[in-house]
Image 1 (tube, rainbow, N blue to C red):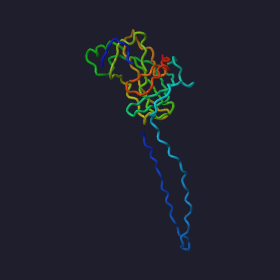
Image 2: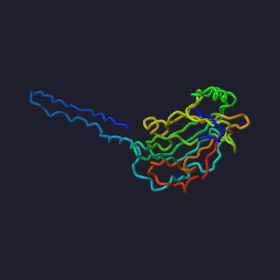
Image 3: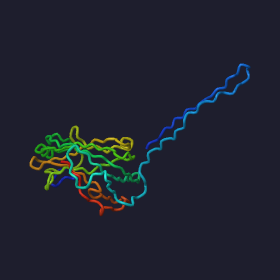
Amino acid sequence: MAFGDTSSMRGHAIVLISWLMLAGCSAGETGEPSAAPATPTAPSHPATPAPTFGTTAIPTGPLRLTDEMTRPGTRLRFGEKAIVPVREYHPLQKVYTEGVLGIVVHRIRTTPGSRVRGNFDEEDRALLKRHIAYHAKVTITNESGNAFSPGTPRLGGDFGDWGPAVTMLGEEGLPGCREGNPPDLDEFGRKGAEWKTCVLGVSSRSRPMTAVQYDDPPYGKDVQFQDDPSPDFNKHYNLGPITWS
């Protein structure tokens, strides 16, 4: 855990159960075998296909906004939902996934910085005691029903032009407000599935966190890693963040 005076950093198998219908033969009154009555056949239902986790095909175009999605630069009140498109590259599986998320940022709360948990030394712990922890709970939903894991959305606190008084790196959290890891496919890969996470920043009362911004593409620029095979669509991105205040 380190501090500084810079700005904030930012499947599954389907089980098909078959019933074997056994029909017996009965003897007639004469003792002669009689034809067994026709056995009703259960209606045949096609098996539900297993959700496909992404595609290996490299995207040929940038993420686009539909009329139902939140426009770049939109300002929302705390508690209002943004609808955003997402595209994730999963390097271990070497696949891309796409979907639509709903994001709700709840109002910003404050608590003493001393309550922030982490592996701090004495100097850092003393610094925390002199500051305030600003935090906002976030609810993320699978709006499209695609079989995907959402990744970690780029949500950050807005502390004004100078950023927070304290920059936090590494593991940190508050009781009841921890970012945690994104849910996996089994947890999130259905319409309406939810992930509850949190935005946390530490600063002084003179430099408070007054808003929360979302700037994943196309609202902000795409972050390209060296081994990512995806093409660079940033000339279509950086359209303007969504802000809750």
